[in-house]
Image 1: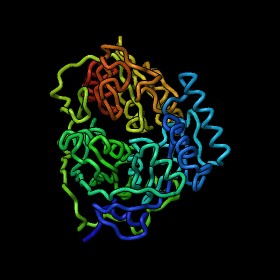
Image 2: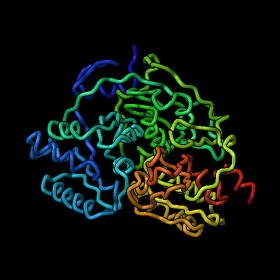
Image 3: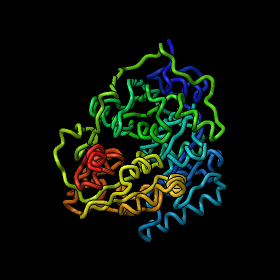
Image 4: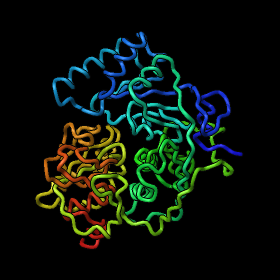
Length: 421
């Protein structure tokens, strides 16, 4: 019997052939830690494990992205201490305020590659599956142990196969596919399983990251897109990287279940407060007025997302009484948007642009919601209190829906703006 992508990657990391259900010790290819969790990890590493150095400074990446720039004196102190630690431990890959969110940054830098086992101090470390890696989030203790030893332990997960068929229609994107799957199987439908996304060869790496990050929202231990197709080829050629010959889709692999999605009939999906899997077709939602439209995060703050929004916003302005906030996922995304006029279009429409990073996704700065406010968000979570007040309401949707919503003032299908024009 063949192996799933997760089984292949973890076999390589363990140095032997493994199958779903086995508990293994595996070699870590790359460890990522960000500013919010780093103080706790470093404390455990030094004071509980007695390790003064990491196992390999070239296989550790540290990113200041969650509260960037610092919003409080305490944030500033923690970040200063982190910079000193990085310098004295000679950590090779350090990305400070403004470079962006850890996940897209590591992909852009070519650090995340197919076949790697990547762990991170963030639940959305599943994002690295966009390039065919096994990415997963871990807590402070497990991260500290991996930093000290270069190894981690985990149970080899079973795999859910998502099979997309057909082609996405105008105004429908990867976000809608991801939310549709959440709607079909629920927030716990893939608990501690790997989610393989098939039939998406034409998607860009950024769009694949949307699917990989949403994998954790259905319980996934990892979310992996095969490194094949036009989207992968463009990324690989630009960075001069290749997928290992041993990593391939094996049709006789065992999957715990297969979810079929017809892209030809898929329409924009909206996640309704206060759970990600509380998803409806936009056409059934009714007219919901909003106060804030927020485009950003590792799920939908990429250049392609801003460009998609700009195509709808071009020549139009944000509705009176609506705030359009855009926080690029990375400085590279911001640079691209600047170079081709996308940023100018967004600014002309009335958008406010934030420093590349996580922004208001975790409700700590750069756009915190007030009680009673309603937000259409392109992020990955709409839990009560996620972006500020627990009395605010967060709806999740695509960048195209976000742009249409900003123009009309209520959650809208992109076609409503196009037809209006």
